[in-house]
Length: 630
Image 1 (cartoon, rainbow, N blue to C red):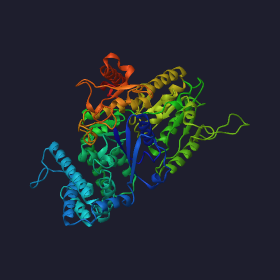
Image 2 (cartoon, rainbow, N blue to C red; image 1 turned 30 degrees about the horizontal axis):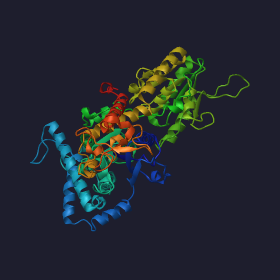
Image 3 (cartoon, helix red, strand yellow; image 1 turned 135 degrees about the vertical axis):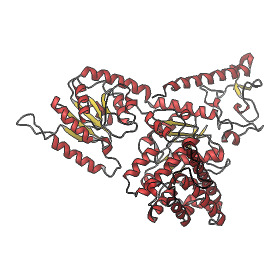
Image 4 (cartoon, rainbow, N blue to C red; image 1 turned 180 degrees about the vertical axis):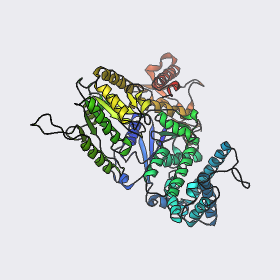
């Protein structure tokens, strides 16, 4: 089938874990064709060198969520319409934009004149969701007819509509004091967030675009899911949403650190919340990466029946050569990750001061680089200063140079050439975060067979599953006691490390992830028999062909070898659908030697058995529903 992969700030041009996961998914599912629709988030992403993509990635289309509206899409919009918005279009925009803003920027109170939201809490939520959908899809229809919305979203009319709502009786309390500069900032960011509505990615069933895909797979919520919402509205294409980090949560954290006024933060957060609720309502299936993300999605209105946990696949091969356990006399604690305030290295350093009282020979290696957070360099400098204050350089005797028991290192240095070397050097791996999503460093430590001590943040308890020690966050004393207990007990470390490696290899590998999505793709398309591809592709008799290539084209083995005599075989009525024939209006050709006296019937039966065997094998690799409690 043909998959429309929708990304934001990641695949195929950006680096990072999201890019790596998308690349592994695409390369693992060679039986499908992919079209990538990528939204870039900054100029650095578009300036990166383009990487070679697999052959079954048939199309890549890009658009920026920064700067001015791209000229290529503007030219396409001008060709479609050829003139500026008229009075009728401006009136339609005012109505639909008013619906959108009213839905996310007001708090229903249950009273007032006709047309106000009803008083019951459940119906008020439904009213807001319906009005947001009316505004969003109304703007999408207008953008498709008019050729784009940037000019209208930057117009004085948009600012006045937002101002009227913010100064109304039911406006969000935090937005009631919005000034003109706040309103301008919000409309500017709304234009970027709604830019997918104005792109020329949709076309029709006869031109390249989302109208020709069988399934849309959004790799995150937010702007990346918007093209999928429109593809479902315009063409009925099913939408799959995968969130390994909940986009709404990331938005809250980013806005809290951004230099924005309170009204701007409140309005943008409300818009993102309404968009997340609409995305979850329209998705055929939502695949969170862990229970922590799943709880966020349920809180935002996602239907529990359409949630299915699929852990992100990680490559275990780089860690296979690491020894099962560190030497019994090792007293080294290792922390690996990105140095930032959420990792709470301050608490780790204070905990290590307590560890040194019980284990004077203990050392701590902090291995990691700095992220994009502008506060990171200052935070790293503060951690270095605290380490120097807590642990003055020590010398073994009067003739040696003193060394600090805490070291700050980076991956790629002579002592730590690869990330596997970082974990191999420690007896215990420590995670001290106060905020955490899916703890990738913890899974890497499990692949290496290391005992771990972690704080209870994000999906830590779900990932570790009893194969390590977990303590409360912001509790240096508990962290120190757990580390001391493992440093003093090599046998316990070995048992926990072995159990951790077995758990990681069972649940968190690339193979498990790819097998899960292979089954999900087939499941979703089986529930959408009248897919766009089926309506678009027909044989000579007008019978729909649901996929670009029939399923039999993936059956192992050869149907007809070069130089082998073949003969036409006609399957009995009702045995094989007409779209599975090898050519339009003519029967499939199979090797004559394979047919025998039974002819085509035996060949068709063999093919059916092969398909069933392949299907059963794929379902054995995919987790049963009873294990979704992870």
